[in-house]
Image (cartoon, rainbow, N blue to C red; front, side):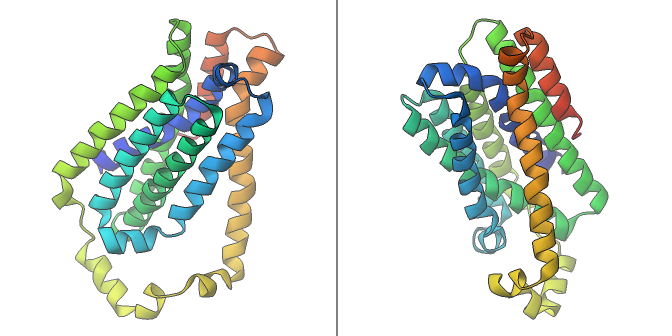
Length: 252
């Protein structure tokens, strides 16, 4: 459980960090201010691909192997974003980042739903909020110290690889509980339900719509707050970074 919380803290850091890094990234690549939307779209596209297939990926790879591969892939994607020589290369790295992020997020939620209590699931999501809070503070500290934005992505990339090693070393502990397995065995129809059968249920579309608007508001506010403060309101970088972190902290 502690390992899972550490993973979700790390999962949230880049989400909170992008908004603070964006004005510097925009200058580096010479793109328009609104091009962050392209970056977010690439990340989302990758995220959707693997999050839709999380159950099948766990079945095929096992949760420990899925987490190890995804953490390494995410770490390499973050490093690639930090090393990107051009805007297209950054967008491509963001897509790969989204693919690995979706696998970790949906895979971990599936694991907790099948094996652990709702209380522990809530703490898992609070861990994401903690990571998203640290993201703006990390990037603000780097920029205030005179470092380039790329350093934040390199540091995070290395942290992901180290966490993947920890998961690999403790892989034997990542097992689905026998109770959950027997429950799944008693309900083969539910376990093998197709995407079409799932999407034919109105409640599924209600939840899709809910998350569509909720995450749209969350991501828009979180990623544009720093730019609005610094470039639209003349707020100093350190103070703007603090309030951006404060916003993400509310999720915890």
